[in-house]
Image (cartoon, rainbow, N blue to C red; front, side):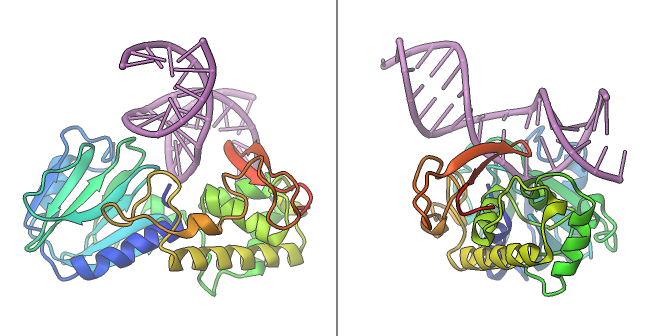
Length: 275
DNA sequence: CTTGTGCCCTGACCGC
DNA sequence: TGCGGTCAGGGCACAA
């Protein structure tokens, strides 16, 4: 489940390998669900062929390829999406949906469960595009302030965990880091968002930033499917405090970690440490 | 506007 | 060994 740290890790891995290279061949899996209603395979193919990758950016969980034409290729990895390079001529693994060939290597997009998505966005239309335009601030951006978050939470009665998962509130936070941030802030994920005090929101943002930064440094969390390169796992799983640890002792107080579905997602927390 | 629910999809895992 | 059932969850459609 690639979240902000995992997508950022993939971005950093691919940037030096792809920027400056020109797309020489485009292969799209027939009827790939990743394109859905966003762009036709023929249009995508036509618009990518011969284009140079001039930048590789990230916004939330979206990877943003800037092309020489000024247009953008957006990739969201969903739950099981993987993106890495392979030697030319190397056989594509099953569930390869997109293969871009460059002078020295190929880029493969593999996604068994097809929760991922691919978008093509014309030049100048990135910020106004529906998926990018509706995103909240980057949690690691200094401009993302406690007061801004407080404004967002003030009118929400949903659980703080659900609010953290809302990409319009904060971009890039998923199930793992929402749970970890709540634990580090000592805040129960069940609390209504608007019940948090400014002090608690500050602790939450600080905890979130710390866990995101530490995870990026460890190349992300490999819980199940995520890899930042072929066969390469992230190391942050050993640093997780509560996520996926239901029934195990809380690392702070030793009480048994509880699991509950919040906002439709499995949520792990300590009822003693998190109030 | 808000909030909650169900669906998409495949593979890993479990119990029999 | 095989096989059916369950679960994982990001984003979106949809209903209230």
